[in-house]
Image (cartoon, rainbow, N blue to C red; front, side):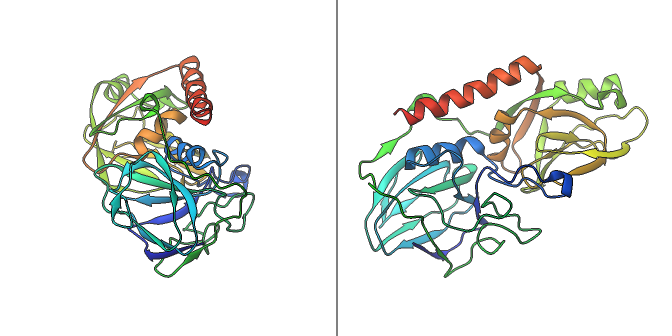
Length: 310
């Protein structure tokens, strides 16, 4: 088990999310950065989709009464184990009666902590992910608090040797984020100048961003005849443009339908980059087609396979 001493700014239990329920109004939720979370699980010896702790901006402090093995990936939150610095994007043995501490992210925004065996919270609609707005999943449907005790699933043959991710698979976090976008489904509701603005201008991540969506500031995107549509399906990656012309990119906890015109979709593999962006970072978009998007997903999955092989 693991006791929370300090929870950090926003620490929740997340996995790949609950799929198949959007028709009933239930968001998918799940990890914001699929790549970092998956790599943490692989290094820890778990299935890539196992439940992890997602820490945002400021990490927590945790005490382990029993020995365990875990991995940390994503934003560098200056982790220490019993006062000694740990390496990010690595897995390591934790002796009994140890304390693991994290601070503010020095790069990126979200860090992931994976425990060998996974986190033993009940599944809700097939997922252990926390959806705080409805108070379901994860640890009592909420962010972690001090004195919470997290159960770690029992597993045989605990590994002891440290592991780290090859530098070939390490993403680079910076203040400039480039996102590939498939245009549509309502690009016809924007003027040619509006479409050019999306792909030729630089935007800035607003402080108004969370697990539901990322608002971008800067140039406005011009509609041809207003922003409103009959509400239709919405999912992570959708770029909605409301009446003020400032795009909003939907993220893991986004609602299931929306009534603003969507100018495009950020491809799945690139949402991990956006999940690590902070307020003030710049965002640029580049148009891509279906084949490039499929190739990007295949490359991501190949990275998981190679990482699992060591």
